[in-house]
Image 1 (tube, rainbow, N blue to C red):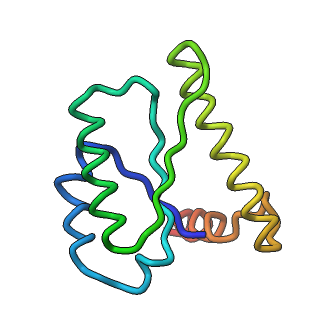
Image 2 (image 1 turned 30 degrees about the vertical axis):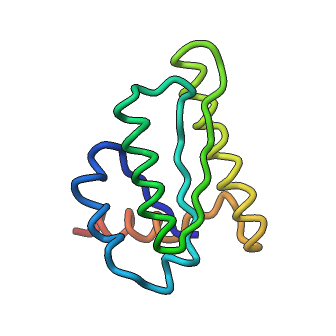
Image 3 (image 1 turned 90 degrees about the vertical axis):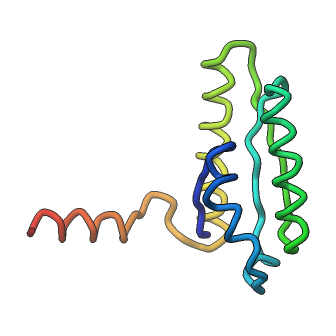
Length: 113
């Protein structure tokens, strides 16, 4: 699965313009917002408006929240979640979750340069 990341509010200056273009691909996308339960009110408003824009283009929007009491626990809760999602997506697509063929290729080619 293709994946990329961005950060609010920066994505509201760059990436958000791309959502003006209506494509069939957008209707197949799942946009995941990784959130803390106590965001700053202005960031929360930005996220809500951004979700509205994305949903208008037909993409699915999901929110996942941090878990834990400390900043470190919250951060690691999302890292672990991301690792498990990657693992299960590999299994779903019948791929070896350890294999990183394109990364290995890239590194080998860069060594030659």
